Length: 52
Image 1 (spheres, rainbow, N blue to C red):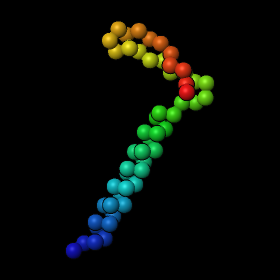
Image 2 (cartoon, rainbow, N blue to C red):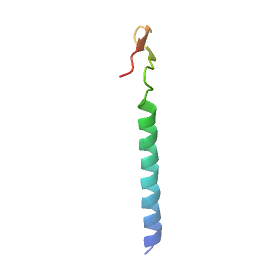
Image 3 (spheres, one colour):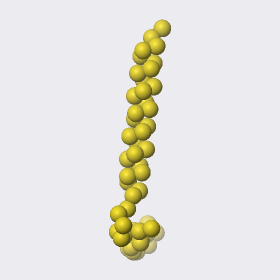
C-alpha cells in the first residue's frame, strides 16, 4: 500500500481546488465605482452595469 502517494494526491487536489476558488472569486470582484460593459446576447445592445 502506498499511503504517501494517496496523501500527496489529496493535498494536490485540495490545493488545486483552493486556487480555483480564489481565481473564481477574484474574477467576480469589481473595484468601487467601476462599471462593467455588458452586451445582450439576443439583440447585441450594449449597456453599463453599475458596481454594487
